[in-house]
Length: 133
Image (cartoon, rainbow, N blue to C red; front, side, top):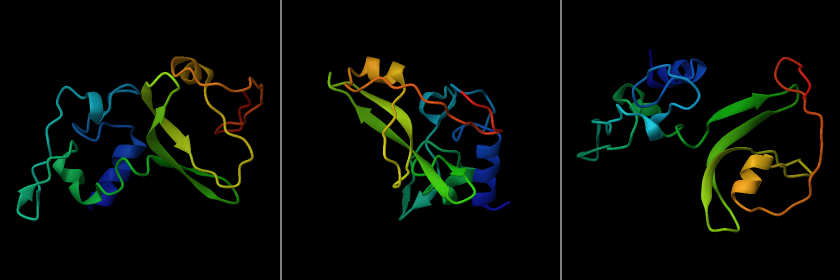
């Protein structure tokens, strides 16, 4: 398989980018107990990023594009980024990038932890598979 095909397989199986183990939602390269820096060479120096060497050539995708949401009209990117709170804390979150949206939604638990101010709203969301929440 090519590195991009391997990366796709890792994503589809929700496996860790570092150890390649399918270990659940809370296991990822950032907190992997088996993580080791990549040993591949880049400009005569080790890559040293925390991903498995088998994913090395595809690493320009890791961390920049976490996944995509496919609708009938669009393919929307989801990025992983830090959100800075009013209390100086920052937390990593997944962010859906939709340039056509008219509202910004933040999970209540994240807003509370970061002391973000806003207006409470209740909405119905249709998730993958057509389930409404």
